[in-house]
Structure formats: C-alpha cells, structure tokens
Length: 106
Image (cartoon, rainbow, N blue to C red; front, side):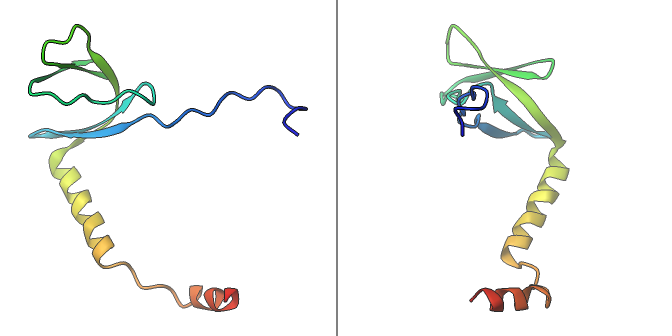
C-alpha cells in the first residue's frame, strides 16, 4: 500500500526532554534533534535567549541550544510532583462499571 501513496518521511526518534530545577523556577527544555543531550561537566553555563536555553560546558567552543517548552514556579511544580507521587502510591479505586468488562475478556 505504501507504494501507492506519497513518499513518507523517515520517522525520527523523539527529541530528549529535560527538567531543570532552579531555586525559584523549573524549566522543561527539549533538544532540537534526537541526538542532542545535555552534556555532563563540572562547569555548566546557561544563557537564556528568547524561548531558548543555551548550554555551554567547561570551555567548549560552541553552545548547545534547547527550546524552552515550559516554565513553572518551583512551588507549583513541587505541588504537582507531590500530587503525582500520592496518586502513584494510592491509585483511585476502579469503578464498578469497569469490572464487568474485565470479566468478559477473560
């Protein structure tokens, strides 16, 4: 069937997504390509420009640029994380409507 349709673009791997936590703000950043990673180093410099975060490690010649996907106050982010942890520890009970469906599948 694919021979009859238009040429398909190759499927790329998803771009890496990172959560950077500062004293007051939490940033969710996304790489521009699937092989772009935040490098590990002793000294990391961050620079903000429009909706991008430029990262330079040690004395590297170039910066790695990441798109800022989301910015949240740390206090709000911590509340959301706490809520997620509580839901994982204590999932809501299954509804009575869902049980008959499971019984019919077995």
